[in-house]
Length: 224
Image (cartoon, rainbow, N blue to C red):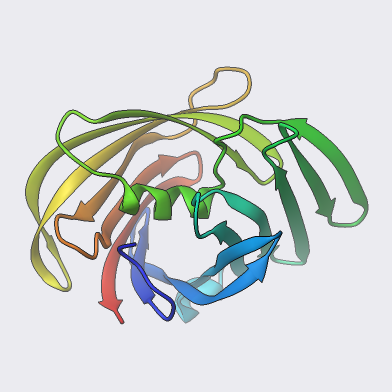
């Protein structure tokens, strides 16, 4: 694997007119026994910088158990704080049954089961799977994703290698573009792309997305 327990990546997050609106970290916390297998426990957290937090009180946390053998998610959660609104979505993936069990807790608790393909990823495990793929120019991959209680069809295309400038210096990278459609076939976001380092670590150097709430760019600032 190009990643290991203890790896922590820190990103500067720019949003709309804010050069640095926040920070995001992703950490491989540990490797544990889980669901008759072993799994990497990965945690992603995002917070605004103090100036932005005065305007928008936000906090996001995603965590996922990723099977060490298949790199498929076993369980994932998405926790959001937006002002006084708190929401926790927990998804348990059952590939053999072709379904995901979803529990959404906010002012009330709602449980449901949604169908899914056996190769379905969640938002976090999809990124780590990308790092493990044999990337090459022209690679085309279809990836089903279930995230926060909804299914998405994701198309991945790889171009490169190309050099990009990051806070860690100029690096050669693979440019991975994504096209995402929801369950109704509607496109989600624009200009979705990830630049993954063309070396043994396959670090995600840059991520970008144009969403309804504005354009986001994440640049890798520190890798440990």
